[in-house]
Image (spheres, rainbow, N blue to C red):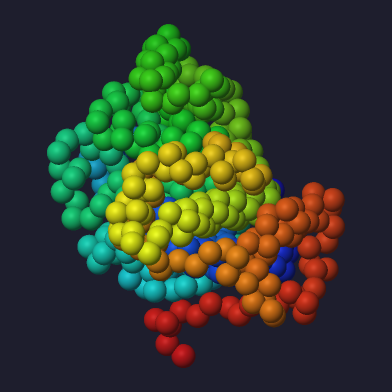
Amino acid sequence: MLNEDKPADDFSVVLQRLRKIYHSSIKPLEQSYKYNELRQHEITDGEITSKPMVLFLGPWSVGKSTMINYLLGLENTRYQLYTGAEPTTSEFTVLMHGPKLKTIEGIVMAADSARSFSPLEKFGQNFLEKLIGIEVPHKLLERVTFVDTPGIIENRKQQERGYPFNDVCQWFIDRADLIFVVFDPTKLDVGLELEMLFRQLKGRESQIRIILNKADNLATQMLMRVYGALFWSLAPLINVTEPPRVYVSSFWPYDYKPDTHRDLFLREEISLLEDLNQVIENRLENKIAFIRQHAIRVRIHALLVDRYLQTYKEKMTFFSDGELVFKDIVEDPDKFYIFKTILAKTNVSKFDLPHREAYKDFFGINPISSFKLLSQQCSYMGGCFLDKIERAITQELPSLLGSLGLGKNPGALNCDKTGCGETPKNRYKKP
């Protein structure tokens, strides 16, 4: 489908409207109640407008980089990802679309707010030296971004990379639309590092696809045994009723070995490309749903902080020690019906409530006195923060999603009324 004449900026106005809704209706409440310090997930304009991200994870030398080279046709070019039998990829490599082949240093990627990678600065300069971007003039990259990661090595050196490897992986996992976890027949054992990785993937099972690569190295009977052994290893780690999709093939530019299941491998490869295309086609729907999910979490957080503050003000007297009063509330919120009150009075699912322990840490660095009640977060011109975010959740975002579902022309939406915002600037780019 890459040859279809489909303009790359067909839905730019929808994304601009989405940015406007986020900045006007969600971000004010998010900043006022310091939601980022609870979840450590700050949304940037670059993330809102970014292309779908496909993340490649797995043990070392299972064929992740070779697979990317194959999908993009980079083999035998000077920009092909280095591959080999030994652990070769030591950087997080981001493959993006560009007018010509170009390498971008990690420090430049993190400084460019037009991209979605500026939050990576928080992982330090050691990590930015291990981050690299490659721009490639490839049609597939006009619609999707690939991220290649260092292979998992099951030994203690994994913790000696000089930067928080697991935290960086979590950052990419949280933002990935599709996650390929790649194995080969020789690396089916699950050690501590891989087990930690699957713990980080919990809750993202719908995005996970398992790939059993280099399958044409095996005869039929052995392939069946390896397939069963892979499921046996992964079963305790993926705690879902329906197991993730497993692709069995050899993803590289060479022909399959003779006397192997060529038709099966080819159909599996086509299925993988169809899966990838589905993610691209659903890009806008997924983005709007992601922002709405984020808005719901921000709203719940604001309601909880407001309830903590109300309870604190009710329990305080002239002779009370404010620190002791609030410590009692934070230590045992159930005694003061903090969470039950939120469930009783608002349209909140109990499954969306944050863990009670999280607020001990949150209020440990954010004094309750630094917050205002929700009833005080209103202005004559701007309205109330809570009303605006609820309107975004119940009306604006579903309406934007509905305009896509009904097949309306997104380009017909008017920016004059909504104010679509300015284009982010790259502070490293010379004028």
